[in-house]
Length: 155
Image (cartoon, rainbow, N blue to C red; front, side, top):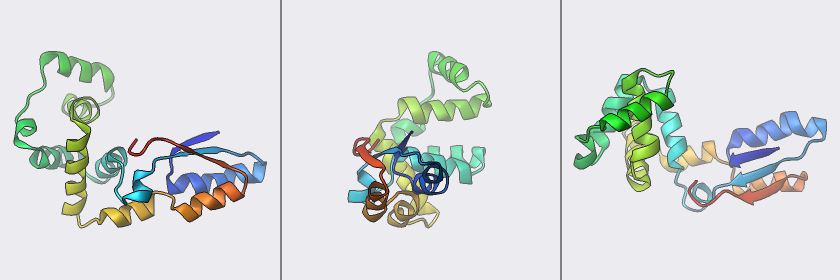
């Protein structure tokens, strides 16, 4: 059994579910939350999307983007790819997902999602502490027979 990214709920799953059955896991951890106290863009996006009504998320995201991305329109081909990829979403929501997952450069996505967290009064360091395992938690997993591996620095 493997877990990616080093999320706190993974340690809870290991403790509550796997360990009583004698199952050990490998935890592939990203180092950036541990070393820089900066969240991974993918988790910031998931959190923001989960906590924000879709139309509001779209508006806030577009407002936070640099001007060249704020006004960029998806090409017909990109719209079709979004539609084929996100078949359960309304087209405008699928297009935002396509922008986030396929078009935006990682550094821009990271900056924008950090800004969106900050605009909500969420401290990224605290977000990391609540979202990702710390070094002591990783040591506890290893002490209980699990293995820790690397999942790159920033996903």
